[in-house]
Amino acid sequence: MSFQGAANQPGGELASPAGDGPPLFRVSQSPGKGMGLFATRDIKAGTVVLREKFTLSVPGKNNGGYSRLDLDAIVKLTLQYNNLSQDTRAELLQLHATPMPHRDADVRNLITAADRHAGVPPMGERAVETCQRIVGVWLTNGFLTSDERTGTCLFLKASRINHSCVANTARYFEKNDPRYITIRATRDIKADEEITLTYADALLPVAERQEKTRRVWHFTCACPACDPNDPAIDSAAHERDIRDLQSLENDPTPGSEASREELSAALERSSRRIELHQKLLSSPAQLATE
Image (cartoon, rainbow, N blue to C red; front, top):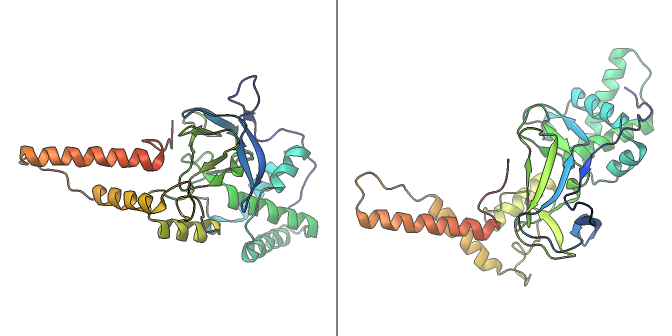
């Protein structure tokens, strides 16, 4: 395996929904989170904030986790990296990669075994470290799509969007061209407000949400919904709404012999369930696909 010269091909094509006006976001420092995306002006709910083509992709089903890392994935990522421009390479390598010594060791061992099997000189140390960085960035920031042709994709700008359990955007992949990710505002966003996505299930109780962010993404969420001291949200009321919604989700459907009163009560509970969904998610749907 080796790194060849860049082919000066652009990666991560960006389609700005702002038209000829200024971009809707900027990349800036986010306190306690590294870099993030921030609105450059007021953004109305429903607005497409970002539409971006992937920079790296490993096709296949459910290949977004560390357990799926193999030599084939490393080769695919390396070849795509080789074809990026120097500027795109630099931007990619600046993305966060969660430190995982065992992952880096596995990448090194796979490369060493492949070189030995091929009977070629071992890859240089700097190239091995670059390969480890590419894999780390992809595993940390990759989006798992629902299309086997794209599998798990890395998007340079979308990867900068930080998590919040009360996010102000949702993402989806285009059915006709899953190479693109679209980020859409689910509520009004003020100028200079950070643009956020929900990584975990926002309808889980706080303890379960925080456990998942620690286990999967290696951070403890401290968004307004998780921090009881944050004045932006009444987190206690937020948790009550989640418990109420979970209770309603388990509500049995009335049978064909249900009385008028039972049907009326079921309809009322269904309306309440929709109301809670809208309140907790800022949108009746998660816009997973479009």
